[in-house]
Amino acid sequence: MLWLAVALGGALGSLARHAVNIVFGHVLGRPIPYATAAVNIAGAAIIGLLAGLLAAGRLNLSPAARTFVFVGVLGGFTTFSSFMLDTLTLSTGVEQGLAAANVIGQTAVGVAAVWAGYHLGLAIG
Image 1 (cartoon, one colour):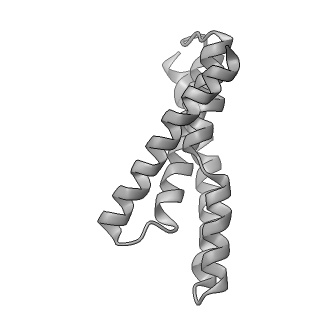
Image 2 (cartoon, one colour):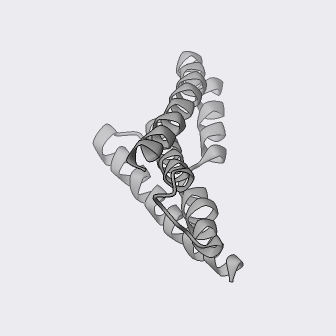
Image 3 (cartoon, one colour):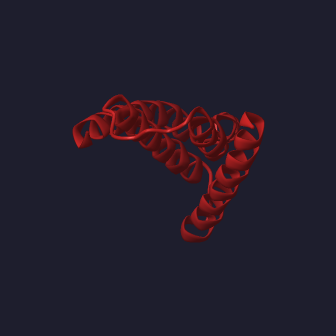
């Protein structure tokens, strides 16, 4: 049952991830690194919020539902491997500054997003 939860959630998360990539490609003319950054930061905020709500007792999820959301949906949605490839792609061209900003910015903003989401979840509770 948990394997199915991961597979279904991962499929949904991956579809959502691809949609973000398409939207950023159309809006900005290039998805790298902006779509990956948006997905990683949004995923960090969402996982923080859900963790805060769980910790505050305002959200109850069965083990299967937690696996579906945290491992499946958010695992399929967030994109650490794409983040690394975006950074490598930027660093091997003429955009080393953007590659460094990508690593520093996504890491710092991602941690801040998890923290903010977690504390929002606690506050809601």
